[in-house]
Each structure stands twice: as C-alpha cells, then as structure tokens.
Length: 213
Ligand code: PCA
Image (tube, rainbow, N blue to C red; front, side, top):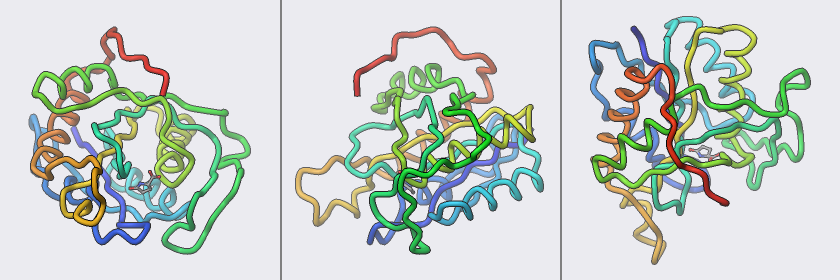
C-alpha cells in the first residue's frame, strides 16, 4: 500500500511552512506502507495539476494534503472542501481569484473520505490537541482539498483522501506575541498518527465532534 502526503511551500512572507517541515520529517514507511512525500506549490491551479501527476505516477491508496493555518491552536482535521476560490492575498505566483468556482462541473462541496473522527480521537489520546474543522477556508488549502476530492470523484475512485491544517511552529511566532504554535516534533508525531489512523480505519467511527466555528 502507498500513501501520498504533501506539504505546501511557505507563503504570506513566512520563511517556512509547518506542513512541509512536518511532512519531510516523516519516516519512509509506516505500518508497512510506503510513504511518498512531496511539497506542492502554494498556487491556485498549478497545485492541483502537480497533485494529479503525482497520483497518476504513484497510484497511492491514501492521499493526505497538509497545510498551515496560522494562529490556530490545534490540529484541524478538515471535513469539507467547497467549490470556491476567494483569496485574501495573492498566491506565490501572484494569482488572486475572487469568488470563482474551482470546477464549473464540480459539486458545490465534497466531504473528506479520511476517517476524520478516528483521527481526532487518536491524536487526542496521545495528548495532541486536535478537532474536526468544518471549513478549510477559501484559499489554496481549500482549493487543493477540493481538487483532490474532485479528482477522486471523476478519475481516481478508489482513493481515500483529505486535508489537515497545522498551527505555526515556534520559529514563526517569535515576532507574533500571544500566538498559538506547536512544536515541530509534536507535528511529526501527529502526522504519523494521522497516517496510521487512515490506514487502520477504512470506515470512520461515530463520535461527537461538531462545533459552531
Ligand atoms: N495554507 C494556506 C495555503 C497553503 C498553506 O499551507 C491555506 O490555508 O489556504
């Protein structure tokens, strides 16, 4: 079995992206599965094109895209991706789509096909703060999650996949007083748990995880 896990390039004047730092720190094999790691461009459209090529090349059973949610306090296991780009700032190539559909022929939204509740349970059991998130925003992270699930629906039916947002790592908050962060080593451990949980739980568990924001 093969698992594809991706991070993103640094963006918004940051020097690093915690997603990439954590992804590159992962082992090459987890529970006997090969782990393919890749850093995607933080760009609308191109990120999906690159992801499509990676899926074609490696034929993974599981795809997990990881990104930074600056200022968040815990690991956010995303439930849903919506068919809209609405960029607060330009991406790394200067694109700034506003209120544009990602795919004209796509659904309004797609749900993650990862076991999101099982992942949250397994993280919290190891004392890593985590919760289900009901919005991945409208920037490149929502875009890649939507792209992944659109490709799954239309091209790669057997894939299970979804998206996870990580907080800042410590070196990013030196000049941001009172901002939440998580140690890089904790994030690497978290990704290992996320991958294991995704391999082990083909179906999600039923557990309380709703919230308003
Ligand atoms: N986070 C951004 C895009 C890249 C990343 O790591 C987002 O949340 O959309």
